[in-house]
Image (cartoon, rainbow, N blue to C red; front, side, top):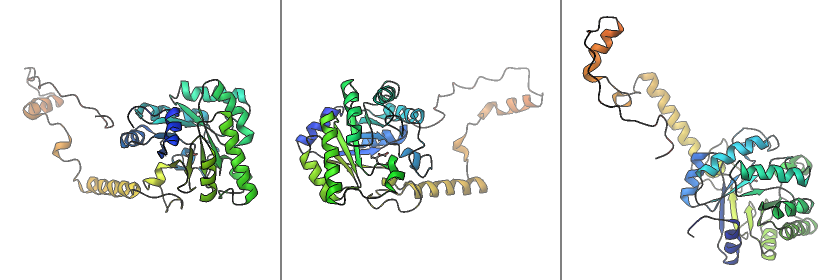
Length: 304
Ligand code: KIV
């Protein structure tokens, strides 16, 4: 599909049975690579509290932090839809503050949509956001901001009653105007059944292949973290090992004097003698030959 992905594209993709790919992103370079790779949506998840900030839960992420990371991702994305996750307590307190906070994620952060956790109990707020022009992606199943209420990170919707409640949640979000809904850690059969009953796409994580799209946390996908990662993920690369190897090789090279080599710095060339003599106050009175114009170079990588 050519052109920028929008919330409308999500609905069209569902209608055409095209599967939606979504990844989390938290910074410019990884967002850039994912955008270039063709991912349909980039989610600045509050998982950043766990995979970037090193906390055990997502609860401590603030709106200012979400804004900071959203700006970096928005700067990088040229094709993908940029969705900012609303941190804990930035939308649960009331619809007015939810609108103000979501509005900042769009106006100051550059996101095109927000995501928030919760089902029926959030439907009014979702409706209010949608009516003022803020597109909302819902999120039900395992909602990590409720980890303490749920008694841990567990699969949700395993009983008939719990599955029915999940379907009601999803239908309420759709009726409120959400353009999609994340189903996190929902049994595959339940996720598929919900997906079949909705007009808006479902985006699954740990919820099987019957969803209309999939989302993964980038750090799990690229192996940037310690340990094996959650069961529902697939490690497509081992960037953690690549970083450890590269950093280790650099440390060894510095210690034995193999880095930097001659090509990593600038030499004065012919003017060296005069310049060095001037340091001891012995330079000739003759002004040193001006060196040729020094080519400009970015001090750090990042952009072509
Ligand atoms: O915070 C997050 O990254 C998420 C996704 C895993 C859906 O909510």
